[in-house]
Image (cartoon, rainbow, N blue to C red; front, side):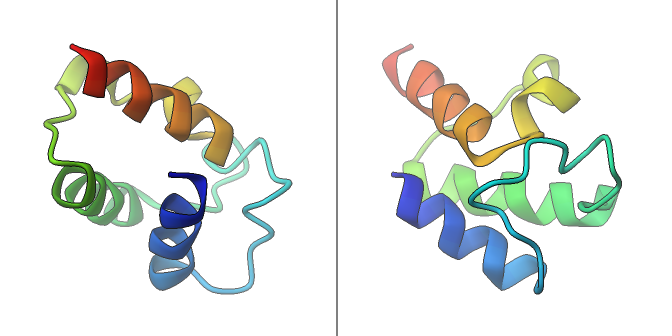
Length: 76
């Protein structure tokens, strides 16, 4: 799952150390349009629907946070 999320992110934004960055939203490394693209790709790739209540910085600041969110939503 982690590798897939990394691939998606690298396809949206280049030249960011997604593996180690924990402030993707806080530091503005992902724009609102990037987030929309990311949500669509995660929904398609993992066959889920990310509700608006989950679209918060804490869930998108790092690959680990995204991975945890996808895992949690996949179980529901």
